[in-house]
Image 1 (tube, helix red, strand yellow):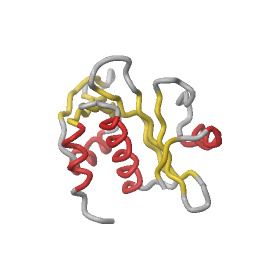
Image 2 (cartoon, helix red, strand yellow):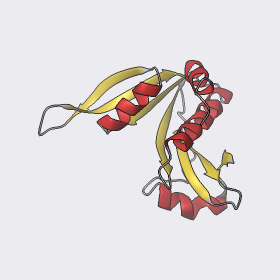
Image 3 (cartoon, helix red, strand yellow):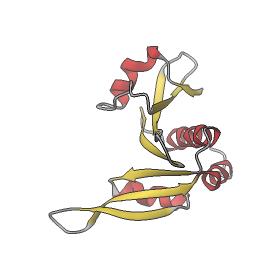
Image 4 (cartoon, one colour):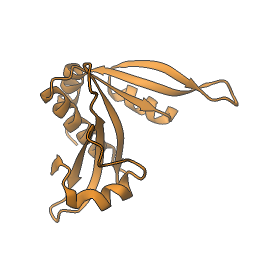
Length: 143
């Protein structure tokens, strides 16, 4: 069951998302729990004070589960649209993850950082129109 975080989720969120301040007013956390209430995954949204772009933060599942991660992202997209945002972005620091995301989803990839040792791009910003991203999520094949 995907839902918004509750105070009782805090210790598990600290395990899934170490270093993420789950008490910031602008941070919105969505979690997935199984039938026993065990948190299996979480995703974060950083809501801006102004503008139309929401920032997708960390997404984590335990154990690793690409489909669950996609479901959490879909919930974040729905929440963002419900709050009136039209665009979303996500910082990506792993080329393999970028390749996986761009294989499944359309969006604009911007090079925003470089590896100082190699000079190669090593940090990207993936930007999407949220309504289009929602359509893409709804068109995914069933698991």
